[in-house]
Length: 431
Image (tube, rainbow, N blue to C red; front, side, top):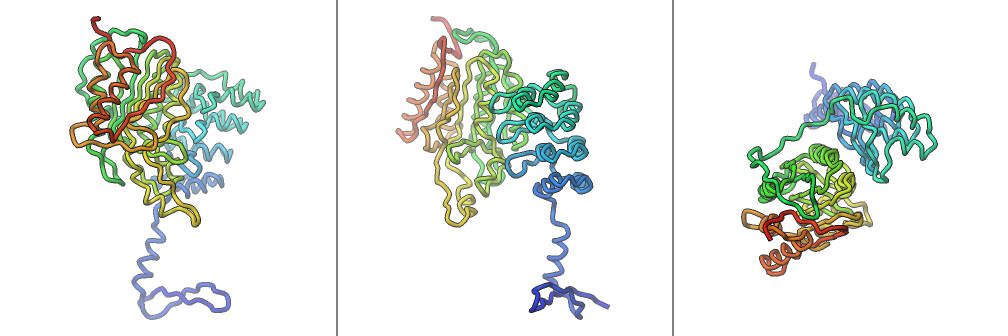
């Protein structure tokens, strides 16, 4: 006998009853199937972790859920496990490949957060798994310092017994370096900046949820070749996902100890919200302002990593294109609120002594991707970056003049400089 599913609502109570009439409603039948096979979400994992429901966490992991997907508030699942305080849940996530060094919006790794909360057993497990003890949050505190600040002296003493280097290989995804045909570097004479030079170059073109950009990938590869020839130890990456961008930035920071000159170059989409600037990975899908905490990379995070170096720090952003997700954000704003139509990038408030931040255009303005092989800004930068005997500030002034000329004054590059000490030269030739 054929069975079927229908619904009948009781007038007095409003409850739903399932009947057994003689026909099948095909629409309801199909919907009922999808209801049972809906994929698990980050919210499902977050709820299970917070409830310390080990069975449900295990089921979600076995179902293939991403254990590094950011949760509400910008945390990773390991942060939620730290807050929940269940060591079994924490270890299940770590065994599934959860990133031990994931940071929340305050720059805290799970270990730093556990130190702040006084979670002794959680800390033992994180340390045994190889969590780094030399990470710092955005206030500049390590886990041990965070513990002492909250009078958790036993925790600080425990952390101090572990080595700085991690004994466990990182589980984060490997990021492939794009161009493998970079020439061998020709050591460049340096004046004002002698010693080690390190650069991270990122170009995102192939966006998945917004129209792609033509030039960033070519821009990044061309800049990387120039920097390599100037004696920089360069890591260059193109078309990175959110997880890959965070990994690249973290690894960049790890290379900056005892570096005399560090340089970060980014080409691709970026947006500002509330005065904060975010770089967009190629898989970013921004429907609400809050999604930026999960799917984008905060520029202040890059700057925080660069501050590991006491040398000169240069951050170049050829990314002041208009917000590609403005309509989606506006459509999902709560009643009574409207999305701010902020254009371009905001002037950073974080620049510390020894830093120079260069923008492709002035604050709150947009820059062109360009119709040639490179964007107008990167084309000018390529023209000047290896000119000998041009001091760094003068270099960017000449780039500004060239861009303003090539765009008929429509685009004016901008710098925020707090450089100190001797003049910095990227290239020095015969006088």
